[in-house]
Image (cartoon, rainbow over all chains, first blue to last red):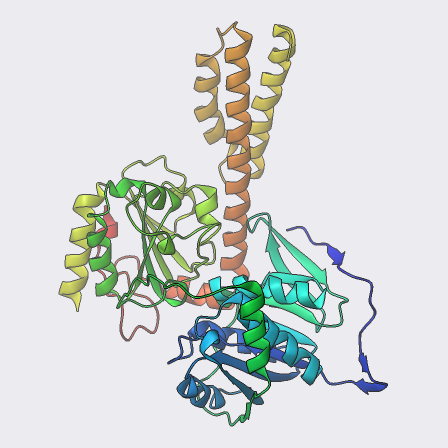
Length: 347
Length: 115
């Protein structure tokens, strides 16, 4: 693997100087991803990453009527303070309304780091925060070397870049699969209400003229794709969206999630939130079953950290077999139901 | 790529590159030669520059794919060799039974992988 160090900026701030007072301790803000009822597990991974800095970990829960989230957040091990920002316009985590809150908090708390999960939520608002603070953002952090040096994948994961940020405040999104989940019990964080946010949010909403129209959420009983222990993915070989039922059944018997390759998504078999790969989600399950996927490198980049890779494909020449730990050459329409039956029987 | 002699050298060079990749990667030089040689020979008679250029472009693409696959393979091999957690799960994964380690809720998958 290549390795290089980028100098992002030239402001020297190994210690933060503010109003003549030197702050030797660092403060890391984690912006929590939640659905106003529950904390999403990606936040827990991010808290682990933040704790690796050895700094105080502060958690921002910004939402609407999200008291229950705050209660749960205070119990997470390793969190010092939970900031509770409640405003109707913060309900959906819009970048336009959330960013001024984060920026405002940075100014009041002398933050040294701002982290958030590298999910659609985080990727949405972090660039805006970075621009408002006029600093660089490090995306998809996979490990933390020191309080200003991070590694992250570049060129679709073919190389790992070690970057050093010399900005006053280090901003980054955390690749959730690279860090363990923080324990949800055993912490006792203080809660702080943020009362000053209302005018900021209102002003941001009116100046950007943004409003929430609605969303289409696909409800699923299955575990989240990025956090599942088992992922069953289908590709072009599935022939149609109907046939994905087969995979869903297989996934359900193993308590896993269903994914898809770009070929399957582009052919309209399934919706694009299932896409695994360079442009889709990055997964790292313990068992990854690739069904009818030939193994384009862009897809492999999204699942290379899977512990065990099982491939089912009728073409013995498919590249996926070169990287799979277990390969099965056969007609998936016959093999997958057999596999499902066998698992059910074994239970 | 203007003349036939010129393309001739380019093609030879590409073939060499493929063999080199075979040698350094897990694919093996024999394996690559067995696959690549018939395909190269099948197009040996081409004299139209456009067609030749198309073939050259495709070969370049394939070389990139092989390179990427090589890197991917290397990444996983190193992970399996040095990452303790990776090792643990891979060692405890039962191919016959499809069982993951410390499995309480998922996977007991019977031997479909025998085939």
